[in-house]
Amino acid sequence: MNDKNLDDKFRKALLFYHTGQLATVALWLIGKKYLVMKFMKLIYEDLVKKSEKNIRNIFSYCELDWNDSLLSHLHNKRPVHTASVMQVRKPIYKTSIERFRNYTQLTNELLTIPDFESLVSAYDA
Image (cartoon, rainbow, N blue to C red):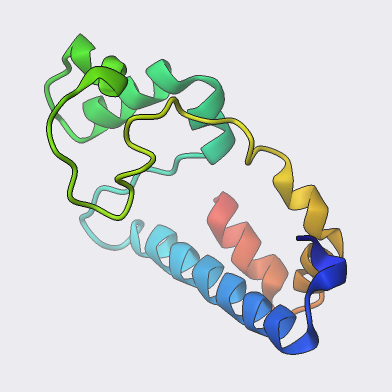
């Protein structure tokens, strides 16, 4: 599916959702300056391209002990009881990187939303 196939209601709902998501993240990032909280910003593409480095950074940030078996999740035999049960035993996939380019019309519409630039600036701060 790409943005040419999106009907108007669905496109508006996606724009509303993404604006709200960005505003929520911006709120947490701004709040980080005033509240005592830990918040790690992680870019999906970085996680996928340099998985081991970023997974180690996550564990370090969360002050969790590292174990090399964490990198061999494909061989873990423990049962999984989450919605991601089908993905847990698969390698980290890279197919979502750059996939947003299929939705350029939709992402260009995001740029026209009032205050979108300030939300992005807060996110990037």
